[in-house]
Each structure stands twice: as structure tokens, then as C-alpha cells.
Amino acid sequence: MKLEAIKVACSNCNLRELCMPVGLNTDELNKIDELVATRRRIKRGTALFHNGDTFTSLYAIRTGFFKTCVTTEEGLDQVTGFQMAGEIIGLDGIVNDHHTCDAIALEDAEICVLPFDRIEELSREVNALQHHVHKIMSREIVREHGVMLLLGSMRAEERLAVFLLNLVQRLHARGFSQSELVLRMTREEIGSYLGLKLETVSRTFSKFAEDGIVEVKQRHIQINDIDALKLVVNSHPCR
Image (cartoon, rainbow, N blue to C red; front, side, top):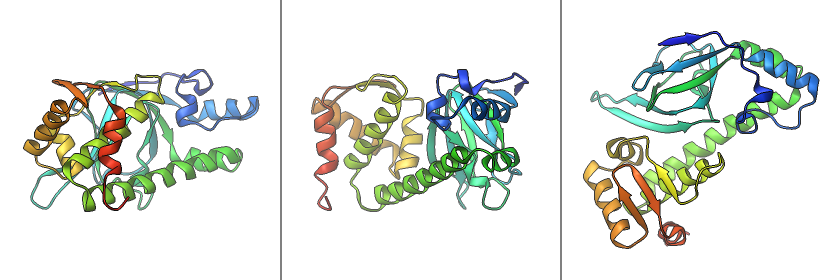
């Protein structure tokens, strides 16, 4: 793992509005800039942190994609989430000062290290930072509830449709297309996250393609009819 002690200026980062508070004055921006001491490069397939590692920092993803996963009692990897540029990972470690999952890079990535003791210290000076951290934690709780709903009551088609819509929405917020995406994760990893077998994921992708909703070329996905994809989700009897 290559470690670079580069001074990262949050105020000049094009992802600042995604992972840092907005509306800060110059003095507050300067304090936030001092928060990030280093940037780390993580190679594809390498862990940023492991389950059981001591928690010291949160990490803002500058480039790349990550998955978080836990190992089941049977020794299998269970994917618990996918994270992309502009998002913060490492929140799992706040509870008991140890990480409770592994964070693995799905492609070469770059992250900013945010020492948590410094975040707590700075939060007392910059109220917007404390509010922002609370928002991030709240969003994580909402995401967990969404996953529980996904795994508890949705059919395979609905699960995959929700997954694709969520992914496209998050990518669009970063300036990417609303109708085109490249999956950084494998079908197997998607299945692990959605609680589906690999064959079910592949079969559902094929059905969406047959219905003209998407075009699939390996990891390249073209969404031809986003309304039809939303209809798959909204047709759920609980809605």
C-alpha cells in the first residue's frame, strides 16, 4: 500500500460539496483544510481496514469504489455496502473504537484520512462540521433500514431495480450520466449485497434486457427506460 503525505486542500476539491459541509466562511474552510493530513492510495483488491482494526479515522473517498463486507459464521463474505467518490467510510468504528467490517477497494482508489479525534475537536469550533457528521451517520442508518426492507420483502426484480436506481442516482450527483454506468462490482458481489444467488442476478439482468429496460454488455449497463425500472419497484404490493 503506497502512502503519500500530500497536503489536501478540501476547499479546492471538486468533491467538497459531497463529503464536506457547505456554506463555510474562509476561516472555517481553512480549519477544515487542516483536518486532512494525508491522502492514501489503495490498490484494487487491497483492504483500507479490516474487521477488528483499531478505529482512528474516517475516510473520504476521492477516487475509486469500495465494498464493505463481513465474514459469516460459515466463512463466507457478506457484502454490506458499496461506497464511491465523495462518500465517507469508517463510521462503523465509532461505536466501540474498532472496525466491524472489512473495506476493500474494487478498483485503484485514493482516500483522504480524517483523524476522528481531530474531527471531534474541530466540531466544537465549526458547528457545521458536527452537523455534517450527524447527517452522514443518519444517512447510514437510513441506508441500513433500506437494505433491511430490500432483503425482507422484495422480489429479485425489485431488489435489482432499486440497486440500479440508487447507483445511478449517486453517480448522477457526481456529474455522471443518468442512463449509463459501469459496474465496479461483480454479479456475485451484487448478489451477496442483495441476498440473491449469482444465477438469480444474471437471470434478472437478462429479463430486464429482454424487456428492453436495459442493455447489458458485461459490466457496462445502459438504462433505456428508467421509468420502467421505477415501475418495477413501485409495483410492490406494499406501496
